[in-house]
Image 1 (spheres, rainbow, N blue to C red):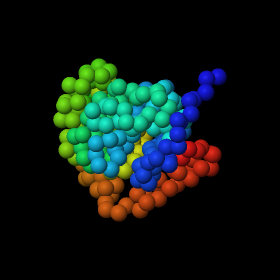
Image 2 (cartoon, rainbow, N blue to C red; image 1 turned 135 degrees about the vertical axis):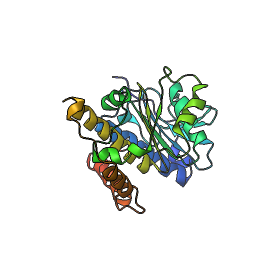
Image 3 (spheres, one colour; image 1 turned 180 degrees about the horizontal axis):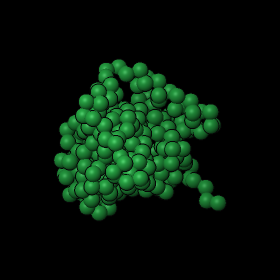
Image 4 (cartoon, rainbow, N blue to C red; image 1 turned 90 degrees about the horizontal axis):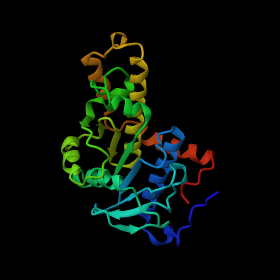
Length: 258
């Protein structure tokens, strides 16, 4: 069995407190995604921008999500130059195209999550897009924008169109025939939005299995009320859900802080 290389030196000892906390949160998001089966072998990516706005953290290319820890995340700048690669394995080029674009276009985006889940890709291939058929959908449905498929995200020119389609305020995007993307002012917020978006896609796929004629759409009033309730200021779950998820990792003995 091939073992992972070890970091060349202690990352924790040479980064500041803010960066270390961000590394821990992002590593936790990767580990939670592995539990929730959001992974696609080694091919999707989460990122988090460091204070200052010119550098961000992303996963080492070749690691499964359950291998990612705070110490082995790769640091790159807005041009894609590697600044810190503790394992020396590099990063996924498509990850830079997508995440670099969003971080640069949206200063509010501290964290960006991109997934290829089965349900997410299925809804991305539906002409109707995400429908207002579940409470889960109401967390994100009015916030979702769409970007048409152009091939694997390796063309730097696509960044302009990605940024345009995302827009100045959206926190969720469906990449047509490709997958899902969420962004947040924190790792917690981006993770929560992805959880609801992916659940909404799973529910939609299940509901539509019985035929579109059997699908009940919410009324405009009910949809508006639910969206407002989810987005009310100081919602209690914003302080409660992330600590609960971290406790889940700790109970399972997952050392994402390594």
